[in-house]
Length: 53
Length: 182
Image 1 (cartoon, rainbow over the protein chains, first blue to last red):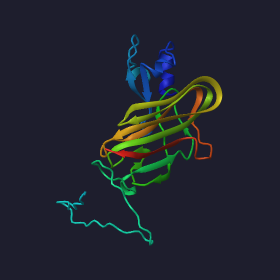
Image 2 (cartoon, rainbow over the protein chains, first blue to last red):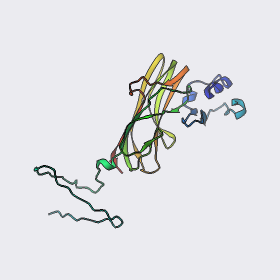
Image 3 (spheres, one colour):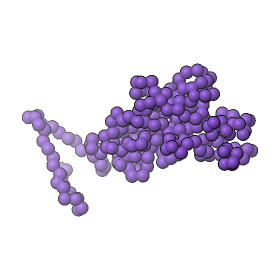
Image 4 (cartoon, rainbow over the protein chains, first blue to last red):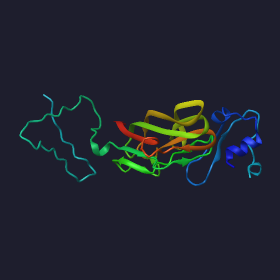
């Protein structure tokens, strides 16, 4: 399951637009995988590492 | 009448040679009536590289495009899918990706400068099954030492998000060249 899938499972109400505006996931193709580059959602808190594990 | 004043560099020991043409024809070089750095091929970096295989990516996750094959890299400024020019100036930069997946809803491409999104190009928002190609272009100032550029793509699909390579070296490409010195 990708980071995107995990976040969508945690917050099903998130829209695609959210991931292009207030939330930015990123992968630098350096072998470290996907990560949250920006989380500025006005109501939903940034998921913790435990929630994403 | 204008004068020509040779000026030796205080720190260098190399000599400057003005070479005549290799034919019997007379040639004239007109110097512009401005102060600046003369650009020749040796100090005008240009590069072009493409993805030589398809790259699976996570949906809705901007991902650095892996550009494994160089078409040319005149100044050895392109490595690890990153362009780090050693000549300061203004660069024409172009990027292109083809995104594919199952029920693709959004595809866009962006130029990243120094690790952050700098210019986002074409963005296609649609529901389709298949591939869609998007591009980005801009003129970007680079300081010639620490500034670097990368190409990132974004594919949102229900599954199988991919930067597609279709065996034509034309679907995921990153290129650029110096158009004006600093």
